[in-house]
Length: 186
Image (cartoon, rainbow, N blue to C red; front, side, top):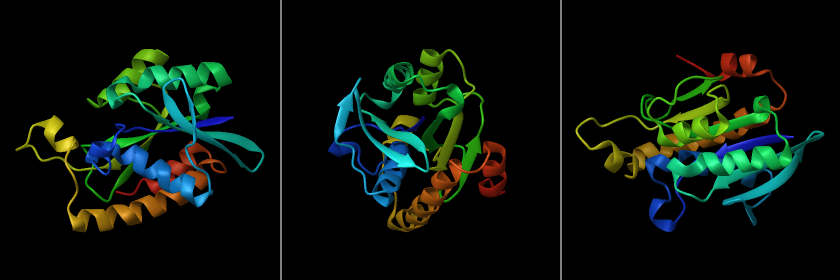
């Protein structure tokens, strides 16, 4: 069993903001597999699907992004999901818009959602799929991540989300090292 988590903030006012890249990507992946987030449990909206012979849970925590760890921890415990079957999808300030980065483990990089997951799981050794949102150092970080993209950036992200569907399908057939080699482009 696998758990794929898209991080974001719930509510209409946060839709399509920079901090909601995880929600946007996991929504696109769910649509490609004709499933919807109709179930609720442990503070998260989720759906289940089969990919090959593997049961996969797609999860969107419904607590604010900096409280996502509790929801992730409860799903992992309840479904007995091993750490190496967890993938977190989130935004990344240190990566330009239109770029992605896959990481096996590492620090939170200041991302409060990742910090909270690390706190609740007692480890930073879980896989991440980070979607670049760039950084405008002239703005306060909170204001920037809760801001919206330009029309040009939205077009670039649409391509990234389409590529992300392919990436997530590959996640189930490639080792994570091979996945990183395929998708982490300089």
